Image 1: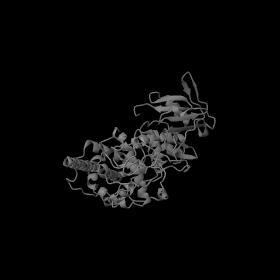
Image 2: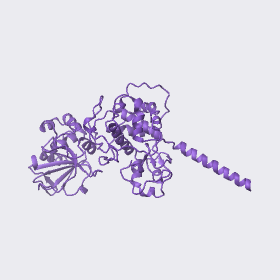
Image 3: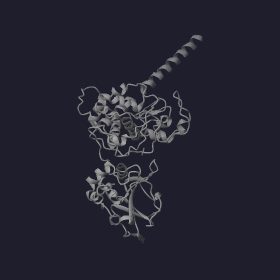
Length: 460
């Protein structure tokens, strides 16, 4: 009996060791505490140019150094590339994102068996157990990777608290979304590049691992585990970059604050490097994200347009450009530029809110018009709001007022609720270039009520 007890004890020890080894193999990720650095500035600010497009084209990759990617890995890579394109990071930024996901999760959106809710996610592709790490980039709620914050103390690194799953469902669901993960990674990546003046390092891919290490804060300080993925990442980029489309950013991160980190606040205006791939912030068929990308995150810049808005204005609304002397500080010009640039409605009038109101009313196959608007609960993201003094409605017929110039009229784009409290993008003649702000439906100038125009045409 004594020998049998010893045998059972030995068998149990062996089984425990096997389970431990298997779990480490399945989820052998290199990140530890993810003490990554917040940027703290709006990634939506299109005036932040990117220096991440240099250095990739001259690399020669030998054949036979990467295994065939699965459909799931290809799909995840295309999401990472799509977010990198949206953020104007070029091929180098996309490569860095793919390198990171290869090292952290083998490009699979991993759930965590210690967080049961994550295993039920529609995005889950296998699971492991490494602290409270989740997803393609192994991001941790306890290290600030989600926008919903911890409601209690951080779980110990040795085990998750039993209540963690119940306390943080929104954060868990958010991090499991691969598009959010990529957006969050690149948000911190850009802050790291600028804070540590790493723009020069991006000219040579041999340095990419060092840059990634500063973002991920893994236990291997050299970043060699990320650098080891370079060849495979480049093969993936060469295969998928051209076919990967920009993806609308799922969350507005402009309200994310710094976390006790000294960030170089001068980088916004002083960034200067070669081979800049600045892009223009335009996302086809996406009114909301394009309006955000062309706008300042607040109204502090006055009539000065963002670089992206000025570029878009010249290209997509040249008549509006001349009307505003290139500033774009007119509400109607801004809305028209967004509608032209996205391809939603190339015929949208360039200025004059009366003409714009008459246009949306007279095109019922393109726009669903609602009047009066007294609450944002009546609106959908992407709706165009227009006010003109004297607008009336009788028996379902809306007749726009005629005082549409100057202070007589106004128009803006409703974005839906954003994390920083803003919900509109607007400009104002002579005082404000395109900026994010908060809707004032109770018009302070006494012009009456707004009408809302929701695009319902073939390009919606």
